Length: 383
Image (cartoon, rainbow, N blue to C red):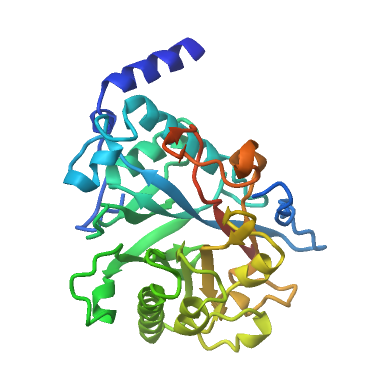
């Protein structure tokens, strides 16, 4: 088996990444298809034991895949870096090692008490195109799950997009839309970023809309660039309000690399996400479970001893209606977790405990991502 793996890697090094990609079913123009002292997040045993009651658990995950590019330079100077001729010498060998690493990481995120092997929905960011997602879901670690893809090409200058992977056994797509931030930045018509992806479907017999985002970076400074993320937050809130106006009896999950923390204005005010469950009255208000997690010193990316929690999954109070009850007749929030597994952490130098990334200082580390993934767990009683 090892000899076969080495042969495949050697062959991959000689081929452009797209040469090994295959087609899968797609739909519409939007294609469906820590430092060592950071605390480990909450226990992973999610078994719920109530006499005379049976429950099932569904995992909903977000993961920034850190520059999952193919090896083809099709975006000029912006794409040269991730090509064999670029500064990173991004060839087939590195590409397929990266694919294996990301597939392995996702495969290790177990959801106990779930009818699925892992998360049923996974939002992703920093992916170049649908091809890299097709290659990802076909990796040996994931292929048996038969994840399907929703993807949309964004106008981002670097060519990175967001996407959604879902297990079609448990999530059925009904509708897909995309939103562009320029409407919320009238004074900056030439600004280009990642489009917002909104996927509505059925999960466990309930209507759920999932919004995936990768908000503008902090380039130029956190305060100086805050207006961009505040605009993205207004776009997200308006999208949620529109969805609820169309059908108030649905749950909405908003996820992404927000380049802001829970307490920042974009999350706290633009979206209106609350820190405490008691502040969510049941009118479509959003709850942000990551606020208190960050306060405990747990983040998804860090620098020089300081942690940020940019990778958030925020949701409407639809999922809190039965939070305090033993009865869980509808999908109900159970808990949130930063998936800071030991194998995802660096154990060397000044990056010890931080996410083990793909490159550092231009050196290929053969790691995973510079962000830890996050997950929320939804529970529902089996009747």
